[in-house]
Length: 95
Length: 458
Image (tube, rainbow over all chains, first blue to last red; front, side):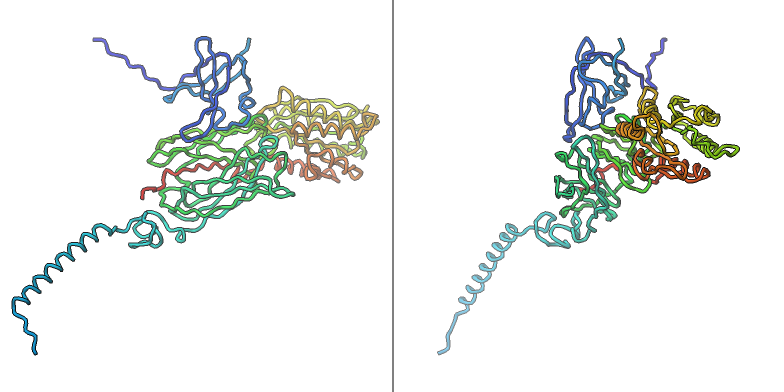
């Protein structure tokens, strides 16, 4: 008899995604607190990345704090959690 | 003539009276049921065992006159970017169990000309501690606030609450990129058995004397019971120069005057240079492992003896081996070039964005190079350094030192030190070390605030 193997995730795995930094989208929580999503075109689809782990709820100078600007090719690294992708860092992509 | 009533008459009177009383009773009961209401805690009148209108007694609400009014501890505003300020105030609620979900307030910013602007709002106030009120992005139209005041309105609703500040524990505080785009990450633990929602968290950074230096605010939407969450605070401009906290590392430029006048006493060993080297060596060794140091010497020309490095022992050894070039016995003192070299190094590729930039310059106080107005050249170099957020400390050595010039080089008069005898130099370097890294009881205070423990049920 073959025993079924159930994969168990014991630690967060780092995920890296590279793409074109399209824009920032300002959103509000259910408690009306503003924060930003980053819209990233990874070549297949446009994904929304929650920037709260990097910026908190600050809406002052988000581009300056990120260190990358719209139109740039960027590399985003983070981890997958129960609540989804959690960004850890964003850097310009090297050629 | 005696009035005679037959017994039947009296019987009818009895029946009639009984009938009438019956209907009076029926109508009375109907009216009572129709119009009477039991006392409640929201009938806008004082009844039952209430101590005031709908408060006290069996009611959930505390009466306003039974609670101690909150008091304002302090209020300050901090520049965030040009023309934008954050304002923070601390208020104390000394009631052990009484909390208010709505305390009206007004934050006012003033300069010498009067009121600049006013922000009004409503805050929650948990019990039994000090809590912060934060207002961000206050536009001042170029005016610089010199005073900030908070006025509290009267809170009309006070309810029991089971937890105050003890509901949360701040497990860690990590400040990064303090000299670039500062980011403070803090892990907070919710000790309660219930989820908290819409938790407002304010981080305030103090100096060792308890003066607030800057503040930021963030939120945690959903904070599950018995769990840890990360709160992230950011600032758009460097705060490393503002915070003389041990939590911020230092990139240090040590600039030492090696002109001929530094050994002009004909003693063996020569003074004051021997004492200067010993004190600078000890100063370098006192820096922390997270600090970096660069060594610059100057006479007719300035030389970078050691670029920024965290190998403090190596730099200390280099300092110990410094000697005055015999050719400099009749040379000049190029203070300005030393400041320029220090600025280049402190703002170059080796500078850590985590660290504040500091220049400690020791000179006998007479700039004599370059030939064309050396004082002006040095002062201009110092102005450039200060404009790049370099904190400049100066030590003027000797009885003939031009202290007016030395003070102008420094970031402030308090950061310019006059040393008459060589044996005082070590003490001055120690004073600078203490000024750079102030240990304080409350360096970074993080205060979460939520209504999760409030009993809002009527």
